[in-house]
Image 1 (cartoon, rainbow, N blue to C red):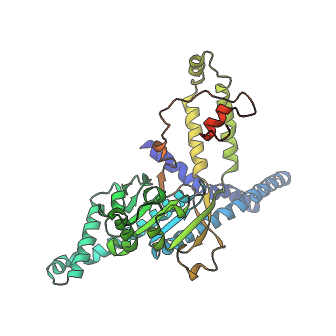
Image 2 (cartoon, rainbow, N blue to C red):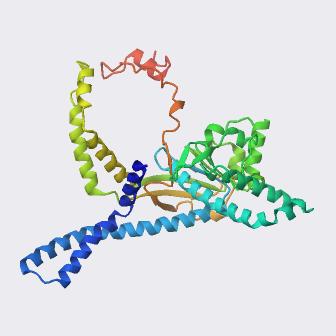
Image 3 (cartoon, one colour):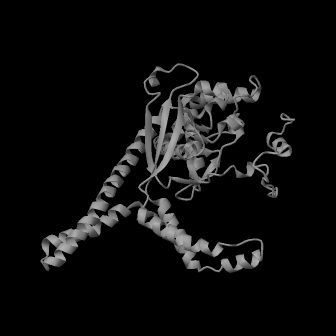
Length: 402
Protein backbone atom coordinates (compact mmCIF):
# COMPACT_ATOMS: atom_id res chain seq x y z
CA UNK A 1 0.00 0.00 0.00
CA UNK A 2 2.80 2.41 0.99
CA UNK A 3 4.65 1.50 -2.21
CA UNK A 4 1.57 2.29 -4.33
CA UNK A 5 1.12 5.65 -2.60
CA UNK A 6 4.81 6.43 -3.14
CA UNK A 7 4.64 5.65 -6.88
CA UNK A 8 1.38 7.57 -7.24
CA UNK A 9 3.08 10.59 -5.61
CA UNK A 10 6.11 10.27 -7.92
CA UNK A 11 3.80 9.94 -10.93
CA UNK A 12 1.87 13.12 -10.02
CA UNK A 13 5.13 14.95 -9.29
CA UNK A 14 6.44 13.94 -12.72
CA UNK A 15 3.16 14.92 -14.38
CA UNK A 16 3.04 18.45 -12.94
CA UNK A 17 6.77 19.14 -12.46
CA UNK A 18 6.89 22.03 -14.95
CA UNK A 19 4.08 23.80 -13.11
CA UNK A 20 5.59 23.07 -9.68
CA UNK A 21 9.03 24.37 -10.72
CA UNK A 22 7.53 27.61 -12.03
CA UNK A 23 5.66 28.52 -8.79
CA UNK A 24 8.73 29.51 -6.65
CA UNK A 25 10.09 31.78 -9.38
CA UNK A 26 6.73 33.51 -9.81
CA UNK A 27 6.53 33.94 -6.02
CA UNK A 28 10.05 35.42 -5.99
CA UNK A 29 9.07 37.81 -8.78
CA UNK A 30 6.16 39.06 -6.68
CA UNK A 31 8.47 39.49 -3.66
CA UNK A 32 10.91 41.54 -5.75
CA UNK A 33 8.07 43.76 -6.96
CA UNK A 34 6.33 44.43 -3.64
CA UNK A 35 9.07 44.14 -0.99
CA UNK A 36 11.84 46.72 -0.63
CA UNK A 37 15.40 45.47 -0.14
CA UNK A 38 19.07 46.34 -0.64
CA UNK A 39 19.76 47.36 -4.27
CA UNK A 40 22.63 44.90 -4.78
CA UNK A 41 20.64 42.02 -3.30
CA UNK A 42 17.69 43.05 -5.44
CA UNK A 43 19.80 43.01 -8.62
CA UNK A 44 21.34 39.62 -7.81
CA UNK A 45 17.97 38.03 -7.06
CA UNK A 46 16.38 39.69 -10.09
CA UNK A 47 19.09 38.40 -12.46
CA UNK A 48 18.96 34.86 -11.02
CA UNK A 49 15.18 34.83 -11.13
CA UNK A 50 15.13 36.11 -14.72
CA UNK A 51 17.59 33.42 -15.86
CA UNK A 52 15.52 30.69 -14.16
CA UNK A 53 12.29 32.02 -15.68
CA UNK A 54 13.89 32.14 -19.14
CA UNK A 55 14.84 28.47 -18.73
CA UNK A 56 11.56 27.24 -17.21
CA UNK A 57 8.89 29.25 -19.04
CA UNK A 58 9.53 27.72 -22.53
CA UNK A 59 9.29 24.21 -21.04
CA UNK A 60 6.13 25.19 -19.16
CA UNK A 61 4.61 26.48 -22.42
CA UNK A 62 5.62 23.24 -24.22
CA UNK A 63 4.15 21.18 -21.33
CA UNK A 64 0.87 23.12 -21.49
CA UNK A 65 0.69 22.66 -25.27
CA UNK A 66 1.36 18.91 -24.98
CA UNK A 67 -1.33 18.45 -22.30
CA UNK A 68 -3.85 20.24 -24.50
CA UNK A 69 -2.84 18.05 -27.45
CA UNK A 70 -3.29 14.87 -25.36
CA UNK A 71 -6.86 15.93 -24.47
CA UNK A 72 -7.65 16.90 -28.06
CA UNK A 73 -6.10 13.74 -29.55
CA UNK A 74 -7.89 11.48 -27.04
CA UNK A 75 -11.23 12.94 -28.13
CA UNK A 76 -10.27 13.05 -31.81
CA UNK A 77 -9.06 9.46 -32.10
CA UNK A 78 -11.81 8.06 -29.88
CA UNK A 79 -14.32 9.48 -32.36
CA UNK A 80 -12.05 8.46 -35.26
CA UNK A 81 -12.06 4.77 -34.29
CA UNK A 82 -15.81 4.75 -33.51
CA UNK A 83 -16.57 4.62 -37.25
CA UNK A 84 -13.77 2.20 -38.22
CA UNK A 85 -14.53 -1.38 -37.28
CA UNK A 86 -11.45 -3.30 -38.44
CA UNK A 87 -8.07 -1.56 -38.42
CA UNK A 88 -4.49 -2.66 -39.05
CA UNK A 89 -1.40 -0.75 -37.94
CA UNK A 90 1.92 -1.79 -39.45
CA UNK A 91 5.49 -0.56 -39.23
CA UNK A 92 9.02 -1.52 -38.22
CA UNK A 93 9.83 -2.70 -34.67
CA UNK A 94 10.03 0.21 -32.23
CA UNK A 95 7.82 2.64 -34.15
CA UNK A 96 5.00 2.40 -31.59
CA UNK A 97 2.53 0.01 -33.26
CA UNK A 98 1.64 -1.91 -30.14
CA UNK A 99 1.76 0.89 -27.55
CA UNK A 100 -0.30 3.34 -29.66
CA UNK A 101 -2.92 0.70 -30.45
CA UNK A 102 -3.15 -0.38 -26.81
CA UNK A 103 -3.66 3.24 -25.76
CA UNK A 104 -6.42 3.78 -28.35
CA UNK A 105 -8.02 0.37 -27.69
CA UNK A 106 -8.29 1.10 -23.95
CA UNK A 107 -9.83 4.53 -24.61
CA UNK A 108 -12.29 2.99 -27.09
CA UNK A 109 -13.19 0.20 -24.63
CA UNK A 110 -13.85 2.70 -21.82
CA UNK A 111 -16.02 4.75 -24.18
CA UNK A 112 -17.97 1.58 -25.08
CA UNK A 113 -18.35 0.71 -21.38
CA UNK A 114 -20.02 4.07 -20.79
CA UNK A 115 -22.38 3.35 -23.70
CA UNK A 116 -23.17 -0.05 -22.24
CA UNK A 117 -23.84 1.46 -18.79
CA UNK A 118 -26.26 3.97 -20.32
CA UNK A 119 -28.06 1.33 -22.40
CA UNK A 120 -28.43 -0.97 -19.39
CA UNK A 121 -29.69 1.89 -17.17
CA UNK A 122 -32.31 2.83 -19.78
CA UNK A 123 -33.52 -0.71 -20.46
CA UNK A 124 -33.32 -2.29 -16.99
CA UNK A 125 -36.43 -0.56 -15.49
CA UNK A 126 -38.53 -1.98 -18.36
CA UNK A 127 -36.88 -5.42 -18.33
CA UNK A 128 -40.07 -7.39 -17.53
CA UNK A 129 -42.09 -5.53 -20.15
CA UNK A 130 -39.41 -6.24 -22.79
CA UNK A 131 -39.07 -9.92 -21.81
CA UNK A 132 -42.87 -10.46 -21.98
CA UNK A 133 -43.35 -8.55 -25.22
CA UNK A 134 -43.71 -10.08 -28.67
CA UNK A 135 -40.96 -7.85 -30.09
CA UNK A 136 -38.15 -10.35 -30.71
CA UNK A 137 -35.69 -7.64 -31.73
CA UNK A 138 -36.08 -5.78 -28.42
CA UNK A 139 -35.81 -9.04 -26.47
CA UNK A 140 -32.64 -10.02 -28.35
CA UNK A 141 -31.04 -6.61 -27.76
CA UNK A 142 -31.96 -6.54 -24.06
CA UNK A 143 -30.48 -10.03 -23.66
CA UNK A 144 -27.08 -9.02 -25.14
CA UNK A 145 -27.01 -5.73 -23.16
CA UNK A 146 -27.91 -7.46 -19.87
CA UNK A 147 -25.50 -10.35 -20.48
CA UNK A 148 -22.58 -8.01 -21.29
CA UNK A 149 -23.22 -5.51 -18.47
CA UNK A 150 -23.74 -8.18 -15.82
CA UNK A 151 -20.63 -10.06 -16.93
CA UNK A 152 -18.37 -7.01 -16.56
CA UNK A 153 -20.14 -5.83 -13.39
CA UNK A 154 -19.55 -9.23 -11.74
CA UNK A 155 -15.85 -9.11 -12.70
CA UNK A 156 -14.56 -5.76 -11.38
CA UNK A 157 -11.00 -7.08 -11.69
CA UNK A 158 -11.34 -6.92 -15.50
CA UNK A 159 -11.06 -3.87 -17.74
CA UNK A 160 -14.57 -3.69 -19.26
CA UNK A 161 -15.29 -4.12 -22.97
CA UNK A 162 -11.70 -5.07 -23.86
CA UNK A 163 -10.27 -8.40 -25.03
CA UNK A 164 -6.55 -8.54 -25.77
CA UNK A 165 -4.16 -11.08 -27.29
CA UNK A 166 -1.36 -9.77 -25.02
CA UNK A 167 -1.54 -9.33 -21.23
CA UNK A 168 -2.54 -5.81 -20.15
CA UNK A 169 -3.21 -4.13 -16.82
CA UNK A 170 -4.66 -0.65 -16.47
CA UNK A 171 -3.72 2.00 -13.91
CA UNK A 172 -6.38 0.65 -11.51
CA UNK A 173 -4.88 -2.83 -11.59
CA UNK A 174 -7.64 -4.29 -13.77
CA UNK A 175 -6.60 -7.04 -16.18
CA UNK A 176 -7.94 -7.91 -19.63
CA UNK A 177 -9.97 -10.81 -20.89
CA UNK A 178 -7.87 -13.11 -23.12
CA UNK A 179 -8.45 -12.85 -26.87
CA UNK A 180 -7.77 -16.22 -28.54
CA UNK A 181 -8.03 -17.94 -31.89
CA UNK A 182 -11.33 -19.41 -30.71
CA UNK A 183 -12.84 -15.89 -30.64
CA UNK A 184 -11.79 -15.27 -34.27
CA UNK A 185 -13.30 -18.62 -35.30
CA UNK A 186 -16.53 -17.92 -33.33
CA UNK A 187 -15.94 -20.84 -30.95
CA UNK A 188 -15.91 -18.42 -28.00
CA UNK A 189 -18.36 -15.60 -27.40
CA UNK A 190 -17.46 -11.92 -27.03
CA UNK A 191 -19.73 -9.63 -24.98
CA UNK A 192 -21.74 -6.91 -26.68
CA UNK A 193 -19.68 -3.77 -27.54
CA UNK A 194 -16.36 -5.57 -27.12
CA UNK A 195 -13.11 -4.12 -28.44
CA UNK A 196 -10.52 -6.62 -29.66
CA UNK A 197 -6.82 -5.78 -29.58
CA UNK A 198 -4.78 -8.32 -31.55
CA UNK A 199 -0.99 -7.91 -31.66
CA UNK A 200 0.80 -9.42 -34.70
CA UNK A 201 -2.29 -10.53 -36.62
CA UNK A 202 -0.09 -12.12 -39.30
CA UNK A 203 0.76 -14.87 -36.81
CA UNK A 204 -2.81 -16.01 -36.13
CA UNK A 205 -4.47 -14.98 -39.42
CA UNK A 206 -1.70 -15.24 -42.04
CA UNK A 207 -2.03 -14.43 -45.74
CA UNK A 208 -1.06 -17.98 -46.75
CA UNK A 209 -3.95 -19.58 -44.83
CA UNK A 210 -5.97 -22.06 -46.91
CA UNK A 211 -9.16 -20.44 -48.07
CA UNK A 212 -12.36 -22.47 -48.05
CA UNK A 213 -11.70 -24.31 -44.79
CA UNK A 214 -14.37 -23.88 -42.12
CA UNK A 215 -11.85 -22.20 -39.80
CA UNK A 216 -10.96 -19.52 -42.34
CA UNK A 217 -14.56 -19.08 -43.44
CA UNK A 218 -15.49 -18.37 -39.81
CA UNK A 219 -12.65 -15.84 -39.46
CA UNK A 220 -13.64 -14.19 -42.73
CA UNK A 221 -17.24 -13.96 -41.52
CA UNK A 222 -16.08 -12.45 -38.20
CA UNK A 223 -14.29 -9.62 -39.98
CA UNK A 224 -17.21 -9.05 -42.32
CA UNK A 225 -19.92 -9.10 -39.62
CA UNK A 226 -18.16 -7.92 -36.45
CA UNK A 227 -20.60 -5.00 -36.12
CA UNK A 228 -23.58 -7.30 -36.65
CA UNK A 229 -22.36 -10.02 -34.28
CA UNK A 230 -21.61 -7.97 -31.16
CA UNK A 231 -21.27 -4.37 -32.37
CA UNK A 232 -17.53 -4.76 -31.88
CA UNK A 233 -14.21 -3.30 -32.97
CA UNK A 234 -11.01 -5.06 -34.02
CA UNK A 235 -7.66 -3.24 -33.74
CA UNK A 236 -4.66 -5.15 -35.09
CA UNK A 237 -0.92 -4.73 -35.55
CA UNK A 238 1.62 -6.44 -37.78
CA UNK A 239 5.08 -5.83 -39.21
CA UNK A 240 3.49 -5.70 -42.67
CA UNK A 241 -0.24 -5.63 -43.38
CA UNK A 242 0.48 -7.71 -46.51
CA UNK A 243 0.97 -10.69 -44.15
CA UNK A 244 -2.73 -10.70 -43.24
CA UNK A 245 -5.38 -13.02 -44.71
CA UNK A 246 -6.96 -11.49 -47.83
CA UNK A 247 -10.55 -11.76 -46.57
CA UNK A 248 -9.67 -9.67 -43.53
CA UNK A 249 -7.76 -7.11 -45.60
CA UNK A 250 -10.90 -6.59 -47.70
CA UNK A 251 -12.91 -5.39 -44.68
CA UNK A 252 -10.19 -3.17 -43.17
CA UNK A 253 -11.31 0.48 -43.07
CA UNK A 254 -7.97 1.87 -41.84
CA UNK A 255 -4.38 0.92 -42.66
CA UNK A 256 -2.01 2.92 -40.48
CA UNK A 257 1.73 2.88 -41.07
CA UNK A 258 3.74 3.93 -38.02
CA UNK A 259 6.83 6.01 -38.76
CA UNK A 260 8.25 6.70 -35.32
CA UNK A 261 7.61 7.34 -31.67
CA UNK A 262 9.74 9.75 -29.71
CA UNK A 263 9.94 11.13 -26.20
CA UNK A 264 9.04 14.77 -25.59
CA UNK A 265 9.86 16.96 -22.56
CA UNK A 266 11.98 14.50 -20.62
CA UNK A 267 13.50 16.18 -17.51
CA UNK A 268 17.11 17.25 -18.05
CA UNK A 269 18.44 17.71 -14.51
CA UNK A 270 16.97 14.47 -12.99
CA UNK A 271 18.35 12.53 -16.00
CA UNK A 272 21.83 13.94 -15.42
CA UNK A 273 21.64 13.01 -11.71
CA UNK A 274 20.42 9.49 -12.55
CA UNK A 275 23.22 8.89 -15.09
CA UNK A 276 25.84 10.25 -12.68
CA UNK A 277 24.82 7.94 -9.82
CA UNK A 278 24.49 4.96 -12.20
CA UNK A 279 28.08 5.58 -13.37
CA UNK A 280 29.18 5.42 -9.72
CA UNK A 281 27.20 2.20 -9.23
CA UNK A 282 28.56 0.31 -12.25
CA UNK A 283 32.16 1.00 -11.20
CA UNK A 284 31.59 -1.66 -8.53
CA UNK A 285 31.05 -4.21 -11.30
CA UNK A 286 34.06 -3.22 -13.40
CA UNK A 287 36.95 -5.66 -13.91
CA UNK A 288 34.84 -8.68 -12.97
CA UNK A 289 36.10 -11.69 -14.93
CA UNK A 290 36.21 -15.47 -14.67
CA UNK A 291 38.95 -15.37 -12.01
CA UNK A 292 37.25 -15.54 -8.59
CA UNK A 293 34.01 -14.52 -10.28
CA UNK A 294 31.62 -15.48 -7.45
CA UNK A 295 33.72 -13.76 -4.78
CA UNK A 296 33.94 -10.53 -6.79
CA UNK A 297 30.23 -10.52 -7.56
CA UNK A 298 29.42 -11.14 -3.89
CA UNK A 299 31.48 -8.08 -2.90
CA UNK A 300 29.97 -5.92 -5.67
CA UNK A 301 26.44 -6.77 -4.54
CA UNK A 302 27.00 -5.11 -1.18
CA UNK A 303 25.32 -1.84 -2.14
CA UNK A 304 23.13 0.25 0.16
CA UNK A 305 19.50 -0.72 -0.53
CA UNK A 306 18.35 2.86 0.03
CA UNK A 307 20.76 3.94 -2.70
CA UNK A 308 19.26 1.40 -5.13
CA UNK A 309 15.72 2.40 -4.07
CA UNK A 310 16.56 6.05 -4.75
CA UNK A 311 17.81 5.22 -8.27
CA UNK A 312 14.76 3.08 -9.03
CA UNK A 313 12.41 5.86 -7.87
CA UNK A 314 14.34 8.44 -9.89
CA UNK A 315 14.18 6.18 -12.95
CA UNK A 316 10.41 5.85 -12.52
CA UNK A 317 10.13 9.65 -12.21
CA UNK A 318 12.02 10.08 -15.52
CA UNK A 319 9.85 7.46 -17.26
CA UNK A 320 6.66 9.10 -15.94
CA UNK A 321 7.76 12.55 -17.14
CA UNK A 322 6.87 14.08 -20.47
CA UNK A 323 4.95 12.66 -23.40
CA UNK A 324 5.16 10.29 -26.35
CA UNK A 325 4.65 11.58 -29.87
CA UNK A 326 3.59 9.04 -32.50
CA UNK A 327 3.97 9.92 -36.19
CA UNK A 328 2.13 7.89 -38.82
CA UNK A 329 0.42 7.84 -42.20
CA UNK A 330 -3.25 6.83 -42.45
CA UNK A 331 -4.51 5.10 -45.57
CA UNK A 332 -7.79 3.50 -46.51
CA UNK A 333 -8.34 -0.05 -47.69
CA UNK A 334 -5.31 -1.20 -49.70
CA UNK A 335 -7.29 -3.82 -51.61
CA UNK A 336 -10.05 -1.46 -52.83
CA UNK A 337 -9.85 2.11 -54.06
CA UNK A 338 -10.73 4.52 -51.26
CA UNK A 339 -11.19 8.11 -52.47
CA UNK A 340 -11.63 9.44 -48.91
CA UNK A 341 -7.92 8.98 -48.28
CA UNK A 342 -6.75 9.92 -51.79
CA UNK A 343 -5.20 13.21 -50.72
CA UNK A 344 -4.02 11.95 -47.33
CA UNK A 345 -1.72 9.10 -48.39
CA UNK A 346 1.39 11.27 -48.01
CA UNK A 347 0.18 13.36 -45.07
CA UNK A 348 2.10 12.58 -41.89
CA UNK A 349 -0.10 12.83 -38.79
CA UNK A 350 0.81 12.81 -35.12
CA UNK A 351 -0.74 11.83 -31.80
CA UNK A 352 0.36 13.01 -28.35
CA UNK A 353 -0.10 10.63 -25.40
CA UNK A 354 1.26 10.65 -21.81
CA UNK A 355 4.65 9.02 -21.29
CA UNK A 356 2.97 6.47 -18.99
CA UNK A 357 0.12 4.93 -20.97
CA UNK A 358 -3.40 4.26 -19.66
CA UNK A 359 -2.38 0.65 -19.00
CA UNK A 360 0.72 -1.49 -18.47
CA UNK A 361 2.03 -4.14 -20.83
CA UNK A 362 5.31 -5.95 -21.43
CA UNK A 363 6.80 -4.94 -24.77
CA UNK A 364 8.55 -8.35 -24.85
CA UNK A 365 5.44 -10.42 -24.08
CA UNK A 366 6.32 -12.92 -26.87
CA UNK A 367 9.66 -13.77 -25.20
CA UNK A 368 8.58 -17.39 -24.56
CA UNK A 369 8.23 -17.98 -28.31
CA UNK A 370 12.05 -17.88 -28.58
CA UNK A 371 12.93 -21.48 -29.49
CA UNK A 372 16.53 -21.23 -28.25
CA UNK A 373 15.72 -19.76 -24.84
CA UNK A 374 16.68 -22.91 -22.91
CA UNK A 375 19.98 -23.49 -24.75
CA UNK A 376 23.39 -22.53 -23.39
CA UNK A 377 25.33 -19.67 -24.97
CA UNK A 378 28.19 -21.06 -27.07
CA UNK A 379 31.67 -19.57 -26.95
CA UNK A 380 32.31 -19.33 -30.68
CA UNK A 381 34.10 -16.30 -32.05
CA UNK A 382 35.94 -15.33 -35.23
CA UNK A 383 39.68 -16.00 -35.45
CA UNK A 384 40.21 -14.26 -38.80
CA UNK A 385 38.68 -11.39 -40.76
CA UNK A 386 37.86 -13.75 -43.68
CA UNK A 387 35.09 -16.30 -43.19
CA UNK A 388 36.25 -19.91 -43.27
CA UNK A 389 34.40 -22.65 -45.17
CA UNK A 390 32.90 -23.94 -41.92
CA UNK A 391 31.79 -20.44 -40.89
CA UNK A 392 30.16 -19.85 -44.27
CA UNK A 393 28.32 -23.15 -44.00
CA UNK A 394 27.02 -22.32 -40.50
CA UNK A 395 25.99 -18.81 -41.54
CA UNK A 396 24.24 -19.69 -44.80
CA UNK A 397 23.29 -23.30 -44.05
CA UNK A 398 24.38 -24.23 -47.58
CA UNK A 399 27.36 -25.47 -49.60
CA UNK A 400 26.86 -22.69 -52.17
CA UNK A 401 30.51 -21.61 -52.06
CA UNK A 402 31.99 -25.14 -52.24
